Image (cartoon, rainbow, N blue to C red; front, side):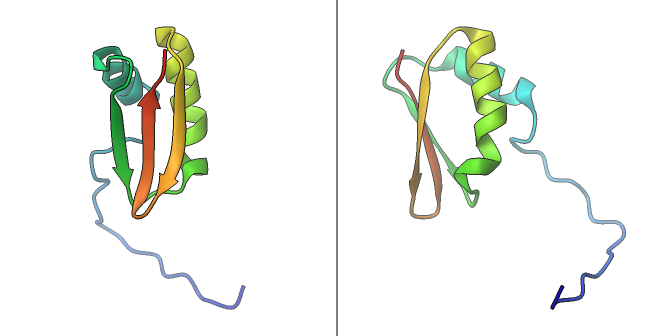
Length: 76
């Protein structure tokens, strides 16, 4: 590794989108055609959690990378 990593202590985990329960709750409130932009992430970081949540709720989604993040639409 060309870059040394530094261990940091006391940095709190921000509330966010890194759990399946978050996506299940969000997807339940979305209607077909609604979308949400998740800023500052790569599409691969969301794929597994969003796919699991969409299947759990019984909906279909699609994602696209946009400048600054990933947009997720409910399509069915």
